[in-house]
Structure formats: C-alpha cells, structure tokens
Image (cartoon, rainbow, N blue to C red; front, top):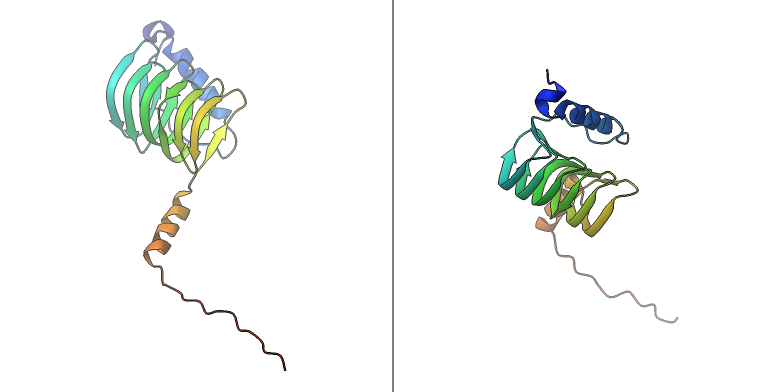
Length: 164
C-alpha cells in the first residue's frame, strides 16, 4: 500500500511502531491501528479532537482531546494538554496528561507535567518530572456515591464500670 519513497519512510516508521506496540508488557494497552499519522516534519498549533487512535511523530503546540488512543513517537515534541483514553509515549511531552484508561511511558520518553490515570507503566530510561495522581475510575465513582449518601452517626461516650 505505502512505498518508502512515496511516504518519506512512513512505512518503515509504521512497521517499527507496530513492533514497539507488540513489545508492550502483557496486559498493556490494546490500541487499534492508528486512524491518522502526523509525520516527523509536521508542526501543528491548535486543538485536535478525534475518535480512534492517532500517532504523532512531529511537533504539536496546543491541546488533544479524545476517548481513543494517542501514540507519541520517539521524535515527537508536544507542548500540550492531553485528555485521552490511552496514551503511549516514547517522545517528549511538556504538559498535563489525563488518561481515562492508562498511560505507558517507554524509553526514551521525557514527560514534564501532571499525570492523572488509573494505570501507569514506565520503563527504565524514561525521564518524568511532575506529579502523579492515580484514581481507578470505578473506585472514584463509588466514593462519589458514598459521599452523596452519608448518614450522620452520633457516638456515645464509652461505658464506665463502677467498682463493686
């Protein structure tokens, strides 16, 4: 379908990424093939909203919003606020990442910002500077339900025994 000379090496890059996805730890993200590909020579500023999975190898300055997946290649540089289902990163992200399902950081990733996710996987060699908040979705929803249905309980002082 794609030839190396037509896609500027896109097929070679795609094959390498497929190999990278196969080497994720068991139980890792199951992402469908990407629906869009932003090449390494592409620079984008703005807001991206999409469904499915997108792979970025270029530069992005802005925001990404999706319930699907985001694949950040090793040469990608993102200055962005990211909201996604699953994020798999080998590149550089400066900004906050909120993943509904999971975040996978693979060497040589560099991430600076806050991460919010129920599941985090990080390889040796990754550089992460920021904060991490892990709240499983179901548990957070149960806690919210409990807070809404709190019943006040009054306590009595302990019973004292009298000497006989």
